[in-house]
Length: 242
Image (cartoon, rainbow, N blue to C red; front, side, top):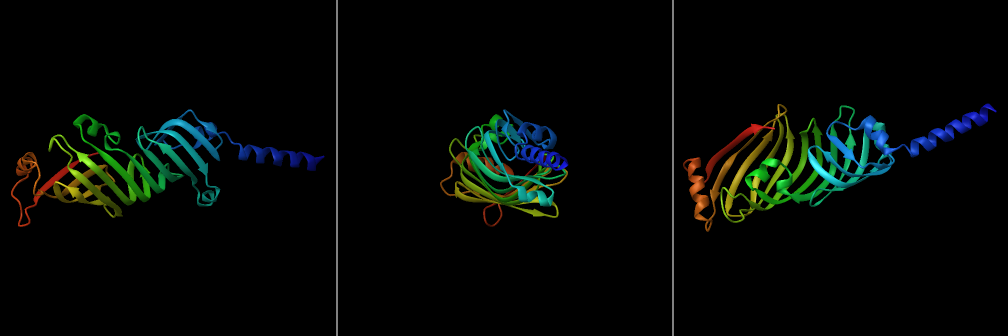
């Protein structure tokens, strides 16, 4: 009789383990940076109609758990989702400290969906994300290896037309996360460095010049940056707090 009871309990716990409801797991394990609604399925294979992850709005979210990651003390998933426009696929691991580790992150979406400041200023472009690793803790990137490309960049304060395509390659340093910024094509010749510090401050420091054939309005705006160097580049600096 005891053997039947033990066997029955084992079967019960196995069934519970493999059908553990996703909405219960979400209440128990989800870090503050993840907010989901319309959850269905199990912790192993589930979905959510919409949600927020690290400040980004997503919909049609699907995931599949990767059990081997439990040996490292993390909950890890292969996930796919759609921003309000665009697509995104990634492997996600949830750390015991509430951090989110994105691996093999590939995504594309409009630039103005990233932050409200872009919407308010009318700045736009086509954003492409390609990250081998991106770790976010308390809403802040703390480690990054990958790139961000903005195509068809448009900033109405500088020009009535598109400014071109630009790319930032990110890596992790002792000071935080930094990215080297370069132009791919367009009317601006730009070299810069983006730095995100653990105290949530950021800076973008570099040099810029208008390429031949650029609209006169751009050259006029750049004159406010000061005198050009021997290469015709003018220094610029933007700083702030996230």
